[in-house]
Image (cartoon, rainbow, N blue to C red; front, side, top):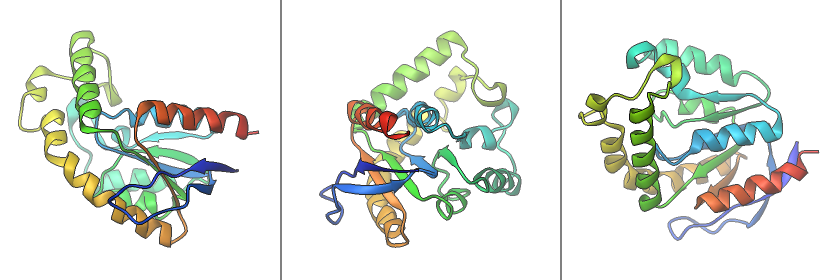
Length: 201
């Protein structure tokens, strides 16, 4: 399926066309933890009627034990071997190469730091209070949230770096023929999804 969609330039990258044809067959959704990319990816997959693959679910075993790297990569390789999918997650050192070599479109959920950290804090508090189950039966734990492995600390350390790295990485993907979309706010993401809904037929 092909549709028309908007790409949003940034002062940190070379100008790009505002209207681009996106082949919506294999889509990688990336962005800082806590931005809501999994929820967005699930909605996108629903609109396009294609499978949604959450990399976290392939990576984390029970009790937040990470799968061995080769096991994780094998799972990812099998998932992206399909003809159509929406994959969400970054995993730059262990899985991104497998996802991006197959992706024909990459959507960057690039929210401001204020929105990102606010969403992450609310999500963490909600999951701690409700005991909401995550991938493979895992749940948020207060000790983990306050530890050196805290997702909040990870976002504080990685947010700026990702915003510097991604424009260059995505420019390289465009050179090989992949299409890219950069969404700067939840409202912008919702509008983009709304435009896709009637286009899917």
